[in-house]
Length: 109
Image 1 (spheres, rainbow, N blue to C red):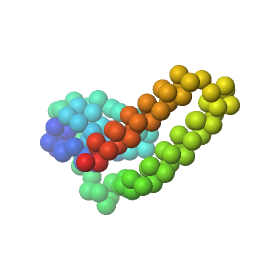
Image 2 (image 1 turned 90 degrees about the vertical axis):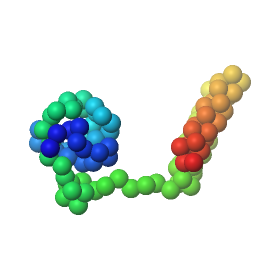
Image 3 (image 1 turned 90 degrees about the horizontal axis):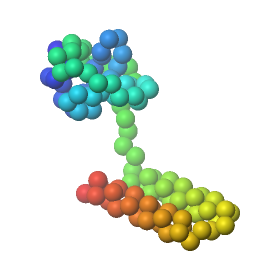
Image 4 (image 1 turned 135 degrees about the horizontal axis):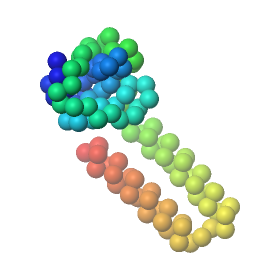
C-alpha cells in the first residue's frame, strides 16, 4: 500500500517504525511524537488498531482539561504575583487565558 492511500488517522508501519497519518504529507511517530514527512508514493504497511503495538489515544473529558488548565492558570498568577504583579503582564496572561478558552470552545463545537 502507498502512503497516499491511507486515511488521516490510520496507523501504519514505515521503515520498521509505527506512525499515524496526520495529513497528506505528514505522519506522527507512535512513540516519540515527532512529525515525519513521507512521500505520497512511499510503501507503507497498514496496521489494524488492535495490533498496532501501542494503545490508541484516549479522549480526555473537557471537564478534566478545564480543571487542569484552571490549576495551571492559578499557578501562573501566583508566580506573577511573587514577581511583583506587573499589571501589563497580568492583562496579557488574562488575554491568553481567554484565547485558550475560546479556542477550546470553538474546537469542541
